[in-house]
Amino acid sequence: MPSGHLHILMEDNMIMERRNLLNSEYEDEEQDPPDEGVDYEDAISATGYGKFQYWLIGVGGFANASDAIEILCISILLPAAECDLHMTSFDKGLLIALVFLGMMIGGYIWGCLGDIYGRKHVLIVSLLVNSLGGIISSFAQEFPLFITMRFISGLGVGGSIPLVWAYVSEFQPAKKRGGALSVIAAFWMIGNILVAAMALAIIPHNIGIVNPTFSYNSWRIFLTLCAIPSLLIALIMLWLPESPMFLLNKGKHKEAMEILQNIYSLNNGKSSKNFPITKLNSAGLKIQASSSSSWWRSTKDAFSSTLRQTMSLFSSSLLRITILMLIINFAIQFGYYGLWLWFPELFNRLETYYKEHPDDRVSVCELTAFHGNATTLDCDSDTLVDPQALVNTLITATSAFPANVWTIFAMDKLGRKFFLVFSMVLSGLAAFGIYFVKSSTDNLILGCVFGAVSTMGFNALDCLGAELFPTHLRSTALAVTLLSARIGAIVGNLVFGALIDVHCAIPMFLVAILLIGGGLLGLLLPNTTRVALK
Image (cartoon, rainbow, N blue to C red; front, side, top):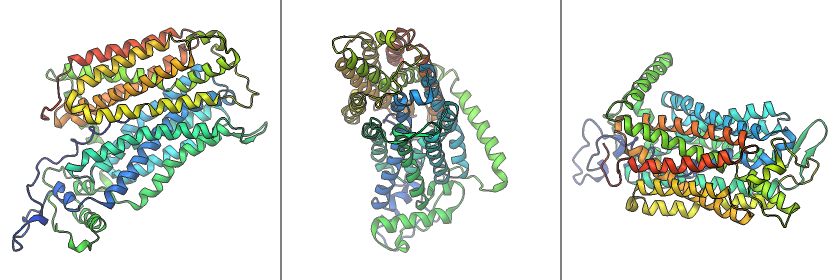
């Protein structure tokens, strides 16, 4: 999803207590470390901050970017793949919806496995599932196999998104964690820009293999290339360590200590034997036995605990906040992904029509009369995708950059509620305006406004999601609200696919109403800006 995830895991991974001094800062050389050892927060701080963290942030960032690439690439290739796969608009909506369904299911599956078997190995598997699903889909000649493989790719994306944040955050000291996760969040936008640039460089050209029995043309080549980043990141991660915090949580103190020593050596250029910490204290962590026979018990306990935590969100003290957050999350993702992922398709329709009718001025919805719910594209044409449409997609992907920068510097000054309400109301008005404007330039301007201000809403909502709920329920609350958000994305794309060609006004106005309504509901949320966490 879009950048702005930096607050989701920052507080969830903070240790309960902080020691005031690191062992390496003891001025009295005869003073020994406490017998019980030091906690994990002090231990990771004692490793220093250098090459290892910078390398890890780069890997995590590109993993996040690879997820963004896999999501946006589908919407970009829809016009090009329409003829080859014989897709109607409903098929296109179903395709995008199934990708999000895979993400929704994958998030729970991989998240549970990550808590049992470790962040690193499960993240590698989820990245491989994402990549292999994407590569195989590029060779699919029929729509049923194609949509199946994209669903499987979505399973991988759904797992790697939360695991990247958990894995990277557990290597960061508290003072650096926010900055590190901010950088990783920015890679989502970088992924959107990269995929749009690759599409512009590849899809419009008549390259590849095309014959009556097998086709591997430009959009398939583009799809294969989009799957490569996930594969490369999975291979690179083979040389990275498991999270020491996870190992400590499993009672593997020796393995955790060895990893911390190696990080210290890499960051400081000294021998690992010089690492000032000799013993780790797991106080504040819930030690879980690591045993091959405990898989079923661990899974059962995790499910029971999740159910209990979920029910607590609907207690009398939290019911109002939970309901509001569920509605707002549904509304913003219905609106954003319902419209954003259809921009490449809409841009292509406009540019294609204006080339054939340069003197006409029509809105997107007025093109219904010229397109219909079954394709009327010239499938024998050498260019099914107008290059200018891809340029417009690249411009809209880049438009989020200044909005991201603004939220980073102004979120604590203007407040979460300001950005949430301002963003959702303005993006709703932009969606409303798209129905009326009658030029390619006006549509592009509104598309950029929509993309930019929507990003600010996601950033504010991520902050609110981490701050509105008490610590012991925060992770569960984020998972439940994310479930509502994914359902919103799925429903939004199904509605667009079913109605865009027959009743265009309905999905456009639904997006506008939900975004504006969701933004106004944000006024009812408590203020969390500069307020201590509960």
